[in-house]
Length: 571
Image (cartoon, rainbow, N blue to C red; front, side, top):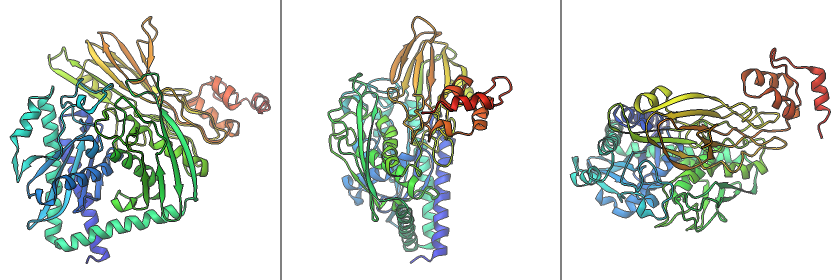
């Protein structure tokens, strides 16, 4: 047994251990995607693989780690896990991610008994996928790199050179890839040692009882939150631009959400099937993105524990874009990033005052790679861009923040990108008029302009460009994401997901979408519109046309008479 005070001390000790894991990871990683962007998922789990404590990074990684550990136990059996062992798993259908997001995890033992696991998932740079950087057009799993089906990186404390040599002689960037994997190992060992110290202090039985109590408490909190939501069934659908192979085919994500007193059911039946390109979601990823929305609605203010999700039930169709099966390609994970807001779209039908309108809807990644003329070495750098969030009953959407699928993440600073690569950032800032007009305005997106100073590859990972962010009520749509290659020239191309072969001097502009608006724009306080014009979020022209507010572009004051005349035209 564990009393309430001891349980709380253990809970905070495990959370501190998870944070220390993250610090060690960021101190030792080679890859700016990890230590600058915080593209990681870190967890401490009980002996069943259920997460007890995590360190925020990419929100959809943590629950996916649960799925991967449980699949590994099912595959190997508990007798395979020895003290000092460390495993790597990147088989997508178990690992819940693509091959470049390997899950490294370690069993935790106390006096020979298995008492839990630690986990660390990051994005590594290269594992022999068919294209350097990222794969956008694979048609089966065998084009997507090396697979490790719960393989031992370390055997009882000793490195398994066979695995490391396979990576070393198959990766285009072996030093950085192995360095990052060893950083994951370091993070996992840190978590193992800290958890063992807790077990030694309080006893393994007390630790196990505390872990069970933590998850039971997480379940109770989630059910209290669920009881506050209206009961009903609502459906919605939205689209991914294409699958990377059939470029003119919109890929449908269809969801029906049912809320009862006992559970929330998220049913993805009706989502696209026979998707040839690599945007298919492994089941664990669909579970993770669905869990993210459930937690945001029920227990947004508490750390993630597996108990939070006992009242969530998932339905999928094997072979669909939301439930990939071998050998379906899964490399481009963007369905798993975009689909969460389809759940919100359905819920907006039944609870428009409890959920926001759509955000810009994507993480809008740009990745560059090539040979750096400053040192002759291979380089690869990437960043995600912020989007505008949707307006909601409580106010305006946030301007230019990271997409809801990765709330613990940051973007890569300009100084880092320019120091480590032959890219020059010519401009970076908010996009005027990108937020959807409404009584509560959608947040604005951002734009960043990259000029390449050497021949390079520029990979744009933006898959929500053909449909616009949806509003709530009488609000209006936000502007959509779009990438412009060589703007203002006779070679200008407006695009989304793309693999570009660039020459010296070529320019890519990554424009991110704004959030949808909430409520009729003519109901917005004119002084707030004037403030938006002053801040550059809304142009004087849009203020008049969309909000019915006349704003002096010099003094930023409201012309009351002209505003009254404009608003008199409201239908």
